[in-house]
Image (cartoon, rainbow, N blue to C red; front, side, top):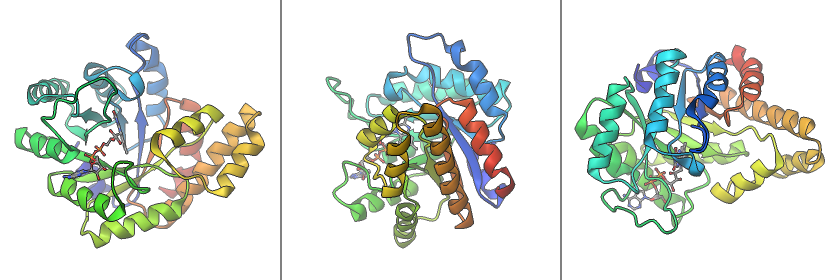
Length: 287
Ligand code: FAD
């Protein structure tokens, strides 16, 4: 089923998960049992990242997305980046996705990799949206940034670029992670002013260990509210307490987002079935 249909049919907050393929050095089967369990916790769909954090490339994304959809019985979205791809590469990726019955794509530009010359056939995710749209009947999603994309001059420029992505075919959006809901609500106001009327899911990352926080903040520049930093500092040397506090914080964010009418919650599960289970159980009666 197309993700746009899920938003239309559900009529209330959509609940979805993100998972990632294993590192190239690990066999792909090494994540199957975790992902199978994660899929039992009731997501409306599961998205599978593409080559993020050195985890490999398209074939693994496609294979995991196919497993999610065809074996674990949950609708799947394959992430697809274009910065290092030619049109011919993308044609092959689309062919592969079609062959595996995947009909939903999260169209991304991707980050520039040091030492790798970008192919320059797609400059922005909106170029990829236009291209995918011209090629066939895929549902297309896009990424968005409540705290502004790191390369954008300011929030006005960023939201106007986001509008171009929606006009190029992105039918729904998933946000970068954030820890302060008021940042998300201000972003939603900006999208409304810019005339963006597609569903926007809030990206929620339950923080379960100290190095994860440091890495995330470095990578995406998410601001940390004082309340969040206090909790993390207090429990940084107690892994079980930090994990439970991270889950509780994420649940509190999600409850507030649902109460404020968020179109969707996209949970960054980090392939962790325990976290997916605890959060799903805590919010299932609210969805
Ligand atoms: P774009 O939408 O192209 O935006 C990139 C920058 O260009 C922004 O600053 C934007 O304001 C600007 N811009 C956009 N269009 C125009 C235009 N027409 N003219 C001028 N400027 C423009 N990375 C991965 O490698 N693999 C993944 O699986 C992955 N999944 C992600 C999932 C989510 C939900 C999110 C939020 C991010 C994900 N990323 C992933 C990271 C993403 O690839 C990076 O953030 C990347 O830097 C930008 O990708 P984008 O698709 O948002 O780019």
